[in-house]
Length: 486
Image 1: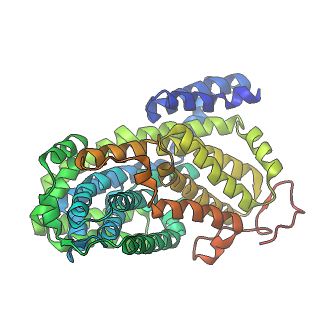
Image 2 (image 1 turned 180 degrees about the horizontal axis):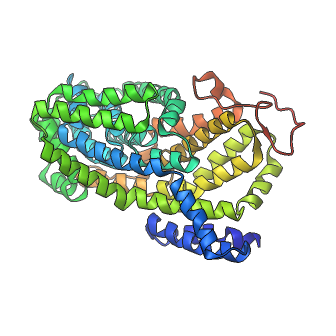
Image 3 (image 1 turned 180 degrees about the vertical axis):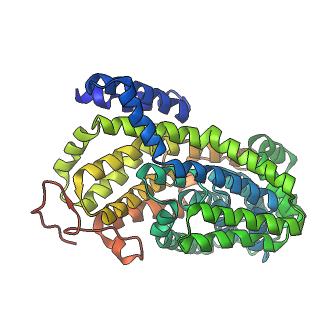
């Protein structure tokens, strides 16, 4: 019976390993799970599907957030918000000692603005790899830095699909989630930036400099053709950087970030960003009302075709598994080796890493492992609703952070394959390997190691807003008398 209840997970994983898209894999697993639930719970089809529909309806807000986030990403790219960020960052020029650092900082900010690590990398890799070539910098350091920076916004961006989906599965607010991990993420960024610069200084690189325009002019025609085929939006952004956009176009991103950290609802933050970009873009003549309407259509359509359809199946799958208490055996096994809630959260992070390595896709890991994390925490922890919400925030952060950052530790992961493919195509002068991705990828290394250690040791309480509740404020069920030292 235990195996039968858990078998929908096996169906999901098998489909993903066969290369089936996560949306379709989730649909297979959900439909199969409905059949199993009818058999083991002795419920009719109407009763079981009502659980699925109720689960999907419980996160209705997330669907609207996904639509507006995709739309805002389109508006930001088209109006020149992304290009202005790059231009501001490159005002002082690049040298062999700063090209990796500037590339890291630019990709961090741009990934937050666009919500996509792949799009950010495709747009920035040509600039910084060729700039690095001209000034005589370290290819490995520059590549690893822009890879790590590109993933920064995937983990904390208001419009990142991984941020939205991981938060939706754990049933936490996206703005709450960003506030929870914001200071930790910025500290990781600062430490990574310091290490990148110190590493560059230690390499004793030559003192050559170059401007952004020179770097873009050096990109060969073959690289432009590759980008046009792989990421057309990256070509448009590079042309905006080359031709020039007003620097004030970066203001909408600043407004959105301030609104998010002020705690305004996610939908409000997104609307403010789009309205701001439209007003300033109209002044800069980069957009008009007709173009805005077309961009909204593209964003809404892409959200429906990708993240929303996947989210519907993912939430439905979680609802069916919850109805059968399918994760109870796994919970009992893990509970045997745990002594505290912080250990539970630590093992949740480890489970995400293994799931990410097995599935080789960060979204597949979030969709598959996310419901398991939520189920184990909800079923095994005694806490107030407020404290339980904080634990769900940590689960959402772990699910997303391990999906995005630990991906770069896995040679066969889709992230690594994509980054190496784009880098090799736009900069054929170097033979890129997995070692180039991870050797100097300080952002990913710091993020993964620090969140696990901070969670396990309880030291996260020293980071504002990032701490999770501890014993005896929260406790594992059935282990009330165990005293855990902090």
